[in-house]
Image (cartoon, rainbow, N blue to C red; front, side, top):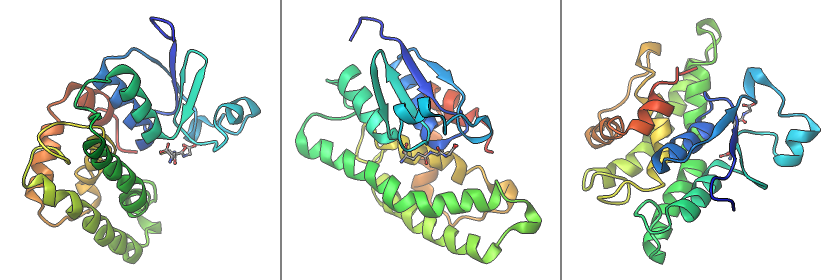
Length: 216
Ligand SMILES: N[C@@H](CCC(=O)N[C@@H](CS)C(=O)NCC(=O)O)C(=O)O
């Protein structure tokens, strides 16, 4: 890699998975350019984009001649290369595995019901909403949040005292979870989750790439 690699993030800033990468780059203080593709911008179905990312989804990262997709894999790559000795992705195998399984759980446990709540409330007009389905997704999403509430009641971040990579995928969705009140979302009280979200809001990169982006 060159000393100052050219770094490009492909993906619209309103995507939760793109936000993870932008926030991660912000935490690491790495400069990048972002190109709008996906959603209303389209262009993810072109042969050129599919050659970079066969899923046709966003985000895709390019660092010089290296191309990578899957948001959580991108976060791990960035931490490995640019923050090797930090607490962000600890080197000790069990500490690292602990971070990794929470990253995976965002994708496998939280993502589906949380996306259903988000699409049901934010991206569906009021007269077309299936409120029964949305309520069921809220209940399932709540169960997912309770998984991290337990640890957060004992320590400041998901795996312990330090902010790590796994706070990023969950944290992106926390902003949406706490930001949908105006659409009638009611949540059971989870004080440790709320305190963690407030803590994340003190981080400049979170404010810049997650909080400042409209929920849409
Ligand atoms: N597992 C993938 C999922 C990527 C994904 O589903 N991206 C969504 C946006 S959050 C997407 O590309 N949707 C279609 C689009 O925006 O055109 C990742 O974590 O990167």
